[in-house]
Length: 137
Image (cartoon, rainbow, N blue to C red; front, side):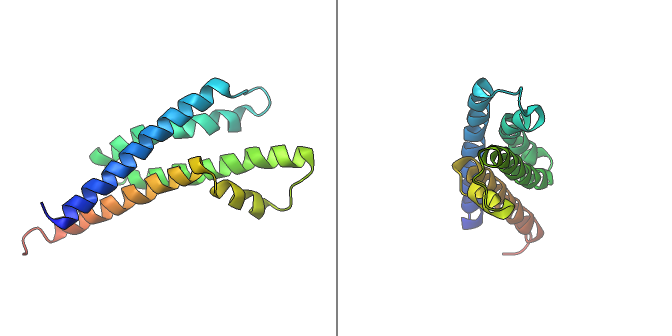
């Protein structure tokens, strides 16, 4: 096994494990989320992490699914920021939208989602890079 294949295997392992963790986080969030106040962002708050693992597996069949993984990560950041903005604006302690987005970018679920997208993208780049040099040594 070459170093490139080992790195790709490790990246896929990290992305798979974290995708499974995001699925668990989404299911856990679904049990405790009240969707009466903000139904659309609240549903997206737990539906996007649940979609993380199926999109990861879809990446093995359709290589461009990692782009969908990145779109889901950005959408999750936007949803978390929107829910945080609603809370801090109702309580009156918001400073700016950029500050709320940056605070949400530092949370574990959002960071985990972005790590999944980055690791999947890096594994896809290594896979595509190795297929072009298959005949050379």
